[in-house]
Amino acid sequence: MELMQKTIKDLAPLIQKKEISPVDLVKACLDRIEKTEPVINAYITVMADKALQDAEEAEREIMKGGYKGALHGIPYSAKDLYTTKGYKTTAGSKILADYVPDYDATTVQRLAEAGAILVGKNNLHEFAFGGTNENEHYGPTRNPWNTNMIPGGSSGGSGATVAASSSIFSLGTDTGGSIRMPAALCGVVGIKATYGRVSRYGVLPLSSSLDHAGPLTKTTWDAAAVLSVMAGYDPNDASSSTREVPNYLADLAEVSELPMKGTRIGICREYYFEHLDPEVTGAVRQAIDLFQEMGAEVVEVHIPSLQEAVRLQGVITTAEAYAYHSGYLAERYAEYGSNIRPRLEMGQFVPAWAYVEAQRLRAQYKKDWARVYEQIDLLVAPTTAIPAFPIGAETISFEGRDVNPRDLGILGRTSPGNFNGYPSISVPCGLTAAGLPIGLQIQGRPFEESAVFQAAHAYEEASSILTITNQLAV
Image: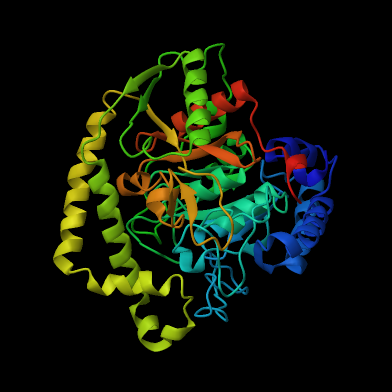
């Protein structure tokens, strides 16, 4: 196995024992970027010189006995919404094409302190407002499993780099599913932790009360390792939580013969299991059967406010996005891509009373979710309703009719996790007959990321479904 195909869990002990060098690993990463980028187009900026300097510094530290932990010397990428001191942060837009911040996002700073090495900034759906990564300014990112297909969005570049092994892990953001959908469509792992668990200081917003930051990785273990560094209170982010961050990796250490025994897995057929591609349905049902074999009890649940919550989430996103972009729209209207400009403009037509009412009902509906979790420990569902579809396709045939696949009501099954703010992970659960990944979504109670990780890890161990890079198109 080549270096860049390995996981953090594989690489960390090799780096610690000085069997491989951070410099060699970063060089392998940059070589992989050079090989894949002409096809995948997952990077907007590659920070080669700085990455090599940081790798040399990491090597010096490790050789002197200053090993910092699992991320020390590990190369990663970040969605180009994360501010990086001295390097462009474009948000995938002409509007910020020349924006060079003078500070790092808190998460970027924390990763640097842990010894991780940032190699570049990832392509995304412009300003994170879309689910396909069809970017009119920087070009579309292509899915490494089939380069004619979308990688999902808006963190599509991040998902693609992990799948294509042009980074060991990546950072994304998630407002309605923008970490989990690319994870599902690219066959990798992506977690959106509880709202407030990860600082968003220095992460350009789409919809502040719904935005989450988090990692995309090859495995659940890797996701736990990265989130352990990213998570925690930040005084620069008023929404960040002061709750203590558990030791996620320690919580994964114990695996019993029936690792899910006593766990109540919730299945909600409304919304989550309606209007699905048959291959998605089949893969997720097999995953649920496997959870039962591991000792879980499956409980049918009903969430009466679910469909209304999905609608209200759209109201909040549209209003908050317009609030951020109104000045740019007034002065630089024509510089926005045509596929997000109309969506941003819609926000000016959301009355203040409608936004206030949506947030009021959101607080009320969170009580519905709390009642549901009195019956269950976790909720399991498909991550997306359909597999990846062709880049540029205006319609696809679905359930006997031609539909616009960019309608998130058709593509995603993720937005309730932003509306309620609960932790939610997507892990691979199979491939379609055409060789496209399918994602399984596991949601837990607020601040119980450990339970989500444990279930996802148990599923990985039992199913042996991981990204198989030799099946990729690149």
